Length: 68
View 1 (cartoon, rainbow, N blue to C red):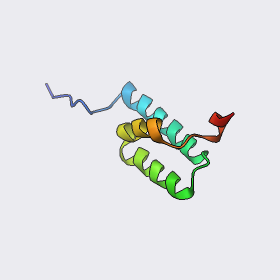
View 2 (cartoon, helix red, strand yellow):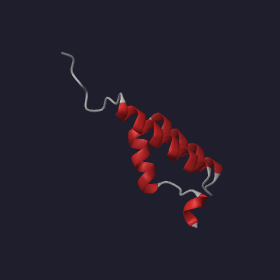
View 3 (cartoon, rainbow, N blue to C red):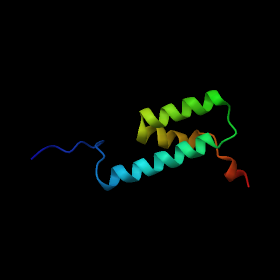
């Protein structure tokens, strides 16, 4: 039996994380933040998918649709 790492995401968990990251990236791009901040947030979500998404969710720029 192989060991399953706590941070290994595959199958349905990986698909859910991919969907959440895509949602975060779309929201980042549609936000009113400066271009530099958009690039930094996007890189954080791409390089660290789970941690980047959680940090973006707590502290990231909000999309323009959320200001309605």
